[in-house]
Image (tube, rainbow, N blue to C red; front, side, top):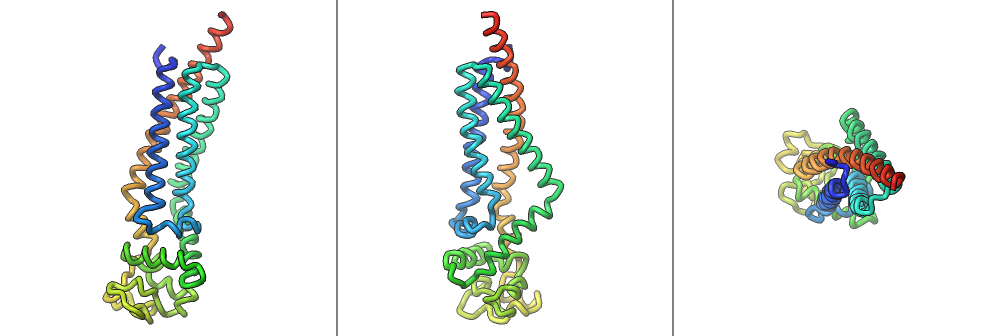
Length: 241
């Protein structure tokens, strides 16, 4: 009988449920880490973690429903469950392939979103300004790609960087630094871009998330196979009952 039992499918769905909880936890950590990225995330810089969070919640629900379906051993319910999980699996694989094939394009989308937020620095969006200052100070970075990005932001007047870029922060310490050579700038301000600093800061969470998603994909393949087998067995039993 192997996998094609209520217990087998229940165990697999419980594994999916646990994986979904892990995805939700990691996505939540990324979104709220150090309370630094919060305002920027809600303004659209990193929509990806939010999408992952929603996907994780869906996985949790599907895992829970799958456990219930396995216990009821309904052929129709099991086939519907297998179809939904199969569609999710195809979507996950497609997204993974796209991210592997087009990593530069994915990064450009995130950078563009970050740039839009940085351009609102020191405007009416005070929460966004505090988040940018917090990121630059805490992660020791400046601008999106590097400190020269500040030349393109209206607040800087083409020559200043935010004081939060400074190694020793003080009022006006970033004046004229957007025009400085990298050698001179490094003495007074952080020159690394915040996109790369955030990417490095979230490296461990990103790796863990990738491992969990891979393992979950394997479990999903087994679940679809198991659900289809159990549905066929249940359907056959009902016909000859």
